[in-house]
Length: 528
Image (tube, rainbow, N blue to C red):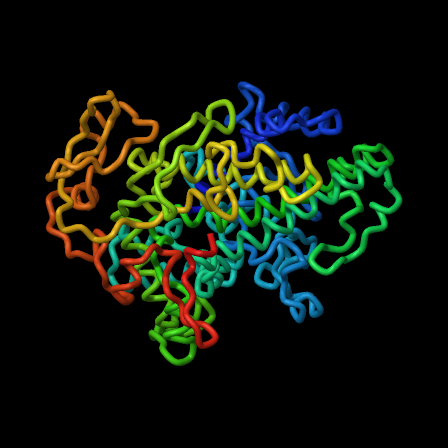
């Protein structure tokens, strides 16, 4: 959904409700260690001033749930070896988050130091602190291969004035991040759902297994666990140093498995959260990569491209996807839920029940903006529901959806395949009637958004005072005008029109696009 620092915020905020979720599931004494640690990290006055460092990775880097979520996909394609490419694993070239091996593109830097540098830089950005050159390098593994001095000299020779965006290295994804972005269909649409669900199912299975061994008391059998088809090897061993304190105690299997499962789930939640970014909602990334395969269509970049990406060419699919992603993310999209409006109950203290209908969403880099409050509220809840699944799997020792209270946040009725997927958004169809509207109170006292025809376009979620004073962009046209610092007539593409894909791509929900695979069409909406 956002830039790295914004992803950190999503994970840390959503996990803050874990205590209340465990309480709602009537967690027993086996969770004392978990409750004590979470209470310590999230106690009043500690978070958000201090990072809620709950996990130790294999390389001894200490991270929060949000830290894992933020680095997933953008810095490391996979969490561990279970889903990694077999050939890369065998040759030692797999790029994994939970590893103690130095990475190929950042030689001479330990994996722990690399992760610490990434997180140090982005926590500074989250706190609105300025970067220095060390942060620029730390935030972009692989950037040491790029001669920044030579690039700056070239800009000077070409007469590019200082202050131009091309001088701002913080605004560019040099190094590994850029290279991974050139092949990232799993951050968009149904591919993002599939990547999230792969990790989510794994996390739930690992957490449930720990509960069953806890109930049986078979600690020897638990520690002897080996790779079992879809489950990783050595999962019965302490997943981090602090678990050694619990080793030999009955609750060891319960807590060790839950802690390992939450790390897998945090990695997957990156792709879930991407679904709530305007730039990721309808960009047909996978389809464009199929239509314009690497090698068949290319945009020349010259020597500068070779320095930045290792290639003198950029594939056309990435160029088109980037334009689409940036345009939608900058101007924003009016949205509704893929499966229709719904009421979501409270998930914990500070997470009140809300009614969700239609809302405005912005893209990467705009997550914390006031006008993104609705999409932000949804994203927090979707990730919290994902965490809730893993906690429930640990509580019942089975698929969390078998828990009697699983659908309680939605009134007790099954709404989708997983609770989190009930909140997936879709852009509204193009509407030429959109214009600057007003915020009014209806007959029941609720704040509603109104367009020129007088039709309410949706109830506001958590409305700040700024909206009543005119601080809210009430239509795509107004939002665009605000961003452009003045009135501007936009082409239809800027507020929902078609420009990169077929007309059907936009008239169907983003995850209900008709895809032609293996000679047949499938409607993705049915898979939710």
